[in-house]
Length: 230
Image (cartoon, rainbow, N blue to C red):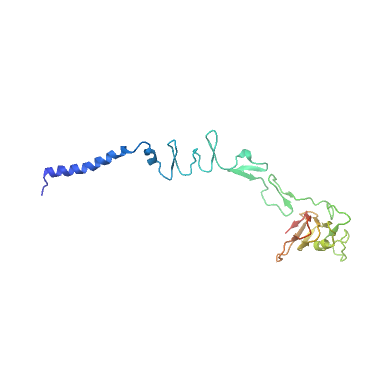
């Protein structure tokens, strides 16, 4: 069945009318709202009308970068010119200059050292450069005389014995060797002074409930020098 021509024309007019209404709506936004419509969250609209993406600062620099007076952005980190002595630039920071391999026991390196060096020199002889005086108690694990009295000729064979025999403030001189003991210093200050860290070590028991060298009440002023503690 054919539809009358008048009815077809009326239907066409009804279809065209909504399309025309849609095409006219774009010009109806109040002044200034067009930028807001284009700069939607999470973007930010600034007073000057610019739209910034998330993470961009008001000065235009990415997050974590510093805006400079000349308008450029400086990445986070340390500029190469500000690396301290003993350090060299690496990426956005500074890397310490050190030997390529870890130092052996008794040796050390600080930033700027290209090779390991002694923590302290051993000196010459059995007691090296230890400042021995008349009150010094001597220790040498290798002494086998069996008649130890703490003198240089008849030293104690353990550090603990020397600490017990030492007067307050006395020096305990320790010859080369590995001393397997846990040392207790209490009620008096003493100074433990080894030949050098590369030749003298104190190794505490792995099962002990205390440290390798324990400084207790009344031992303020105690010093431990030129030996390795493990």
